[in-house]
Length: 287
Image 1 (spheres, rainbow, N blue to C red):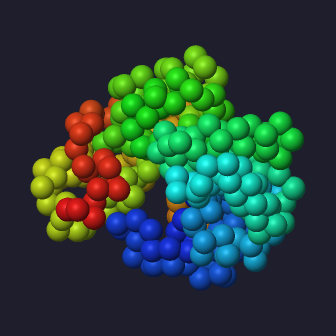
Image 2 (spheres, rainbow, N blue to C red; image 1 turned 90 degrees about the vertical axis):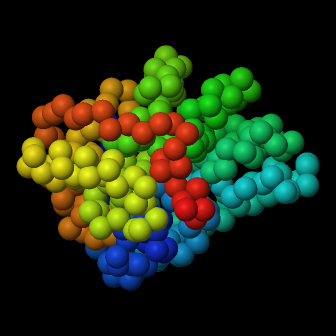
C-alpha cells in the first residue's frame, strides 16, 4: 500500500478544519522535498486545482508519479470532446514538465453517464495505448456509481471516499469486486475533510454531535490520537492499494508517517447510514 500526497490544500482553503488557508510557495516546496525524502513519491492533483497546479509548476516534480483528474466535458459539443481532452492533457504535461502521467482520472463520474461518456473513455484509452498514461480511472462518490460503470467501462483505478464513518466501499462490496477485477482502489477523505480529527466542530454539524462525542470519547479512553486511529483503520483494510493524504505542513507528513507501521487495533463500528449527508461533503453547503 502506498501513500499518495494530495495537493488541493496547496492552492485552496480546502477542508472544514483548515486553519491555515492557502499555503505559501515556500511551504509547498518544504512539503514536496520532505515527501521525496520519505519516499512518498506519488502526487494526486486535478485540472480544477488551478492554484495548486500553479504552485507545483514552480517545483521540480519530475521524479514523482503524477495522478491528475480531468475537467468536466458534459457541456462540450459531441465530437469535440476528444480534441479537448487531448489539448487539456498536453497542458498537464507542459505544466509539470513531464512526458507522461502515472494516472489520469475522470473527475466527474456523471461525465461517463452523459452523451459524451464513450468519447471521453476512448480518449483515455488512446492516451494509454500511446504510453502517455500508465493507468486510467475515475473518481466516485458512492458505490452505486462504481457498479454502474462496470457495465460499460474498464478502468484501472477507482478513487473513492473511505473513513471511520464512511465504510460503504467495504459494506457494499466495491473493494471485493475491484479486487477480483484487478482494479486498484485509491481512497480519499480518510479524515472526512478534517472532521474526524478536529474536536471543534462547526455549528452546522451539531446534529451529529453525539456521534462525534462517541468517537472522541473512545479515542480518549484508548489514549489514541485521531490521526493515528484514522490511519490505522484505513491502512489495515485489505485490498486498498493507495491512501490519499492531504497535508498543510511538513510536520503533518511527519506525524502521518510516525503511525503507518503501527499494529492493527480494533475500532468499534462508527459507520453512518449510507444516505446520511454527513458522509457526502458535496451536500454540506446545504446544511
